[in-house]
Every structure is written in C-alpha cells, then in structure tokens.
Length: 251
Image (cartoon, rainbow, N blue to C red; front, side, top):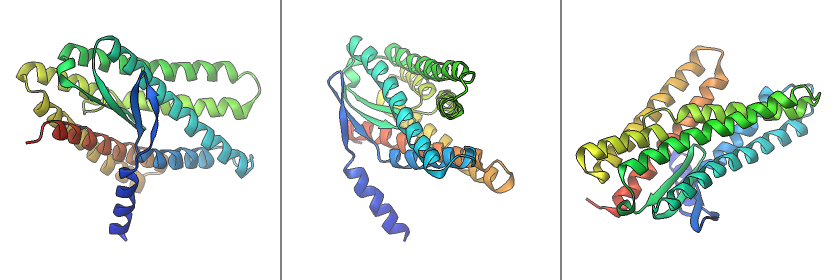
C-alpha cells in the first residue's frame, strides 16, 4: 500500500504543471498544493460554524485555498521582480505552499543579494498577512459574518506562513540568510546550500514529530495537524532545493 502511494506521488511529481510565467520565468506548481487545498478546505469546513450548510463551508474552504495560492504567487512575483531588477538570472521557480524555490544561476547572485531577497520575502509575507488583517478589521463591522470569517482565516494562514519563514532552514527566508552568511564565510555556495537545506529538512522532521505529539497528547488537534502539514511541505521544499544544487553541481 505504501509503495503504491509513493509511486502515485512520484508520477504526479514528474508531471508538475507549469502555471505560467513571472517576468518571463517559468513557474511550476509542486504537487504538495493538492494537500494544501485539501487541508485548508477541511480546516475551514471543520472550524467554521456548523450553523451554516456544508456546501457553503466547502465553498469557503476552496475559496480560501485559491486566495492563499494567489497570496503565495504574489510573494513570488515580488521576489522575482527584485531578483531580475538586480540582474539575477532565475531559470525557473517551483511553487510550494510555503513559498517558491528559485533555480538561479549562482554566477549572477552574491551573498548580499541573497540576504536582500530573504528580507524582502519576510517583509512581503508580513505585508500580505497585514492586508488581510486590515480587511478583516474593516469587514468585522459590516455584518457579513461569512465574508469576515473567510478573511480572518486567510489572515491567520498568511501570518503563520510569515512566522514559519523566521525559522533558519533553507529554503525559508531565514534559512536563506543563514546560507548567505555561511557562503560569505566559506566561499562555497553549493556546500552551504546543501547544509542549509539539510537544516531545513531537520526542522521539518522535528516539527512533524512535535505535531504528532501535540495531536496525541492534547485537544489541540488542529494545531498538531497544521504543524504536521507545514513540516512535510518544508521537508519537500528543502529536498527539492538540495537536488537543484546537486543537478547543477554533481559530486
């Protein structure tokens, strides 16, 4: 059963679809977005008031997933715009629910640009979460409970994404800062990318087991599942970033 499941996801991975281009850069959608849509929809359905019909809660869940996708896509548009304006050659972007992993030509980037892009990513996450929070504050007095609760969910999800990026594991923004500092100290871009990627993978593994612990030992099952979900995606993104480095610089 497990082998069949792994085979299924490998097939999906091999057929990751292009979703368009950002400033001429090809964007591929990682298969973990399937899990994101299911999780976000299920979260809204189970956490939203049961006074509302199931079809409405499912619709709100799907709408939350779609809007979250565009929030992450907006973040990548900002980062890619800054990168291209600074002369960085971005070959392609693989879009994960935690953000994009850029495949860049290392000869076109330096450690200071890497830090700039990481800081820009952190600020963009906070701004997006802040926009949804402001919208929620404005809508909470409008009397439309359905709309303001939907926006509240988006503010929460985007804020949690912003917090996640402060963990120092690549390809998260703080991990990108760590990679840049290690790169500056050693001069070895490829090795430091792998090390930062392994740190990101390890953070994901720790979060996965901690999420299981929370789920099994407390009533905070939603928090536990959220942590498990985010950790699995972080591990996937970290593995993907390491493989990109290995493909460009085989050892």
